[in-house]
Amino acid sequence: GQAETLAFATILADGKPIRLSGQDSERATFAHRNLVLHDPQTGATHSPLHTLPEANASFAVYNSPLSEASVLGFDYGYNVYSPETLVIWEAQYGDFANAAQVIIDQFLSAGRVKWSQNSSLVMLLPHGYEGQGPEHSSARLERFLSLAAEDNWTVANLTSAAQYFHLLRRQAAITNTEEARPLIIMAPKSLIRNSLVASDPKALSEGAFQPVLEQPELGGSPKKVERLILCSGKISIDLATALEAGKDDESAEPTDWSWLHIARVEQLYPFPKGDVERIIARFPNLKEIMWVQEEPQNMGAWNYIEPRIRARAPRKSVVRFIGLPKRSSPASGFQYIHNMEQQRIISVALNRGTLTVNAKEDNGDE
Image 1: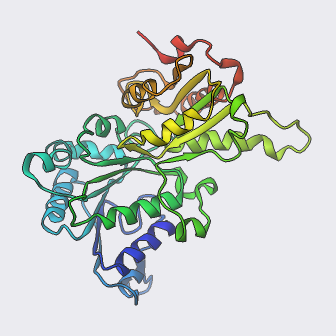
Image 2: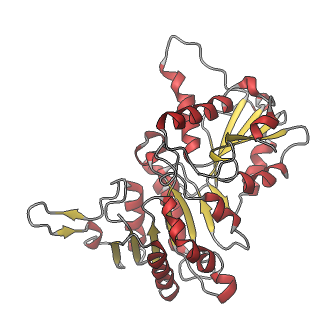
Image 3: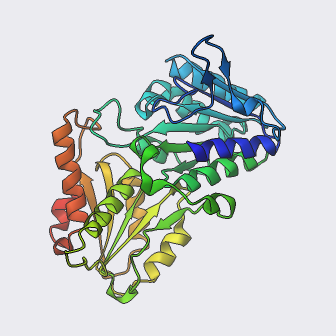
């Protein structure tokens, strides 16, 4: 939330107007956005970004109704006719974009090719499996990736505050240019307050957006690495949490992770093929490349990412999938089942004993 507000402030200082709308955009669904303050005595409201001395452009934030197709359609039209504005639409939950699918299919994904309409609209779609059930888990990442072609938009699933800061600024920089493209962000839920996604201030002031992030403290002995995990978004932090879990026990023997490396694909489309190729090339003894995701196999990024991994995998390595089996509904509605499923994914991914074992079974091949 702080990184987002800082990004907005710097964008306004650069002279770019911002329009933000969504069902709970003033405070955000998970109450992380403190852009509108309320006086408990009078009911009056105040937005600090409206009085920012350095601001050289307007800032507008609206709580919009649960009428996704109409609101997203309005915001798309607003952006096309006000191309200098950074327009952001935020779904209450990513699943709710279902109700705006016709706008996404007909306009957002194809408007540039069909009608030469340039849009830099940002969609924030809260996405992540926390056991909240099938209507509050999935932003249907697979749909956006299946529509991705001809550099029509950018699709991202981020794991740090600095990454979000820099991606918003990058998007603002391309407004009202020929480079303008929509930006689809699988926005976090539980990660909003997870300490593992916090960033050092220098990462904001001196850093830049990275399409791929590598897990710190892994991959230090390239010749020993046998499994390379590629992942994106919340599951990346779940894996990082599991790696950190054993460090608190000072009496336990340190776990040997020399056989493992993890890379987070932060920008899914356009696919950062050069970054992925350079990472794979560092490890001459890879036995397998594993794509790990929370979503069922027929959802999420797997069907999009699999051919791109296989095209770059070393000849003797296996490409594997670890996630949920194929399903018609995106998520379980039972917390204990969700916990068991998540634990299985993490356990298989971080278990050296599963190297190239039961690959066909894990992939859910039919």
